[in-house]
Structure formats: structure tokens, C-alpha cells
Length: 451
Image 1 (cartoon, rainbow, N blue to C red):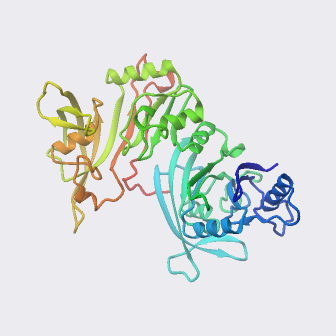
Image 2: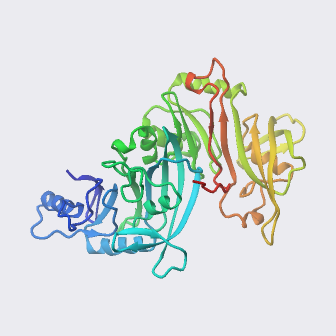
Image 3: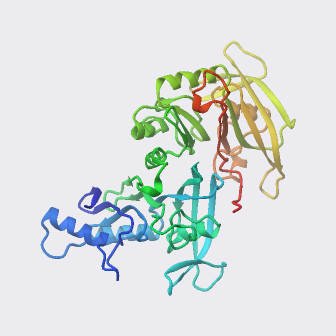
């Protein structure tokens, strides 16, 4: 039975089952293109041959979202979009090794026609094609790591070959993983597809959630991923999200498309516990019931929940470590705060501890920067950004409090990430969280994989 996700006069979006070929091959097995044509023929009582344009493919063992074109105009425009890399493809995968939270893989691939396998070869090899992807390690459970992949190019067996190439083959991959057991299903799934509608010119995103034995243990994380949220920790009481930049945390701060709204669509009941500025990345906590929300809010109010950040700043701080005690007045009209060394009638105290981790001396047009670890002791609006700018060390990428001219040398955005949360061993803490530490890497820190 064909799982149709969306259809109109120009498109048919459906789920490709794992182990089904996209189109007819020498195996003679039932294929998705034929299945989709039969669906159109039956539903619309089409006489004769049905036109359905194939504009992209998935490997036979891989399941996921696919789009077919129902008209020649749609086929031409979607094919052009795929070639121009305007179609965004996201994959979920599982590996059995640990990875840095973020990574970029760039390789050169040729197809071995005798075995139909992809081979990684040195740059400059005749016939080699450049292959590029980026990934985020979402969470780790029972020796398995769930990863979220953005595919930048579409080479033969690209994801499978590139992860095998760094000594981290995909779970259940019978071709590239020598440890795969007979009968195991590869844990690779095209869960999200985004493209511009060929006639309406509107961006459209379609998702589908992986399922099956290979994905056991990651149900909540996969449900959230299909809603655009990376959950690095889940239990019946709390969800910890590794927030991407540009997304507001709470509905009251960002309208319809926020982390809270996405999690509500995934799980129903959810309660924001604290927030990060929209451009800030990293750990955000959400409670799954009112009792946990009350407990975690109490920990934050009593300053028992320790929150740590990594940030890259311009220049070098005046001391290797210090505690900044400053005072902030919020300017609601300008959506910013003014910082003072001494209290004013309308100000609130901000306490921020920092420790210098490293300094990178400037070269050419690239200015000197320093990496700091921050412990946030109070939770005021824009506290870290405003405090560091006040002492002459603005955060890299901060156009509100920082140096816009210098930021042009760092086009990756605000370099501020909530990297760690530490729960006390306290009676008020939910039992699963007592003494627990949750952590992620900062996306702007280079941490190469070592297999």
C-alpha cells in the first residue's frame, strides 16, 4: 500500500519503503515508480500510460520521502532544482561509535562499476566527484549514536561510503559495514525533503519518521527530528534540546515556529523551563509535565542548576578568569539592555563567571579571538553578550552588541553555545536527573573525529 504524503496536479510525494527499488531493475521486484503510477491510474481512472517523472533517487535499502513529478513542466523544474542543489535533503542514520556533536565530511568518490560500490579516492583522481555533507550527532544510547545529516551533494552511496571512510560505518549496512549481521536493516532514512513548488513557487517541506528494528530505542528522538528538533536527552519527565540558531524557544517569544511549538506537535504536553536568545545555540530544557516544570524552575530560581556556555570573543579578556558583577537596564523598545558597573534604580544584577580556554592570534584580516567558558549565575536578557561587550570583548558574530565590521570575517553567525547543564544531587531534582550532566559541543569548535 503506497503511503502518500502529499499530492496535487503537479506533484506526488510519498514514502519509499526500505528495500524497494525506486524503479524497475534486473531483480524484477516491485518498484516504487510502478507502484506510484498504478496509484495514480486507479485513483484518477487514467486510461493508457501514466506520466510520472523521476527526479531523484534513494538507494534500494534506504527508505524515506520522495517526490515525483506529475507533469513534464514540474519534472523539468524539479530536475533543475536538484541539479542546482536547491532541494534540501535531510537523513537520519545510526552508527555504533561516538562522534563529535558537529562535523563536515568532504571526500572524492568514484563508482566501481564492477561492484556498484562507491570508492573514496584522493582529490584529482580521474573521474572522481566531490562529495560533501554535514552532520550533527543527536544523542547516544546503548552504544549507538543517532545522527542528523544534511546532504549537500548526491553522489552514489555517498553517506554510506563517507561514514565508512572515517571508520564509522552505518548500523546494518551490508555493503560498507563489516560488522553488520545478516538480515540487519541499514539505519539510514531520508526523513525530510524541502523544495520550491514548481508552479506555486512556495517552499514546501515533507517529513516522515523512520521505524523498524534498526531504530529501536530512539522513538522520541526520531519523532522530534521529524518536527525539526534535535533532542539530545529524553526521559518521561524532561527533554533536553540541542537548539539550532535562528529558532526562538517559547511560543510567546517567537510565534508559531518555535521549539515549544515543534515539541507540542511531536509530544502534545510540553513546558519551557528556560530560554536562549534566538541566535544562540545549545542546550535548552523542556519539562514533560507540570510537576517537573515546577521542580526545574525552582532549581533555576535558587541557582542550583549550573549552566555553562562556550563563546568566542574578539580580543583577550583582562584576566584569565573572573566573575563579572554588572547591572542591566532593559530597553524594551530597542530590545536590548544597557550595562552599568554600579546599580541604578531600574537595573538588575548580572553575575557572569568566565574562564579563558584559548587565544587565537589574528593573521591578516582575521582579528585575534579568544575562546571562553562561561558560567551563568543569573539569567538576564542578553546577559553574556552585553556583559562581554561591556568589558571590551564582544562575542564574535554579535551584531547587536558587537563589532559588525569584524564580524564580516566570521560569516557563521553568533558564536555562543550553551554546552553543559549540571543538576545537583538534591531531593528537589527528579530522580533520573540527580547529579546528571548533559553536554554538547559548540558548533564553532573544531573537534575532528578520531576512530
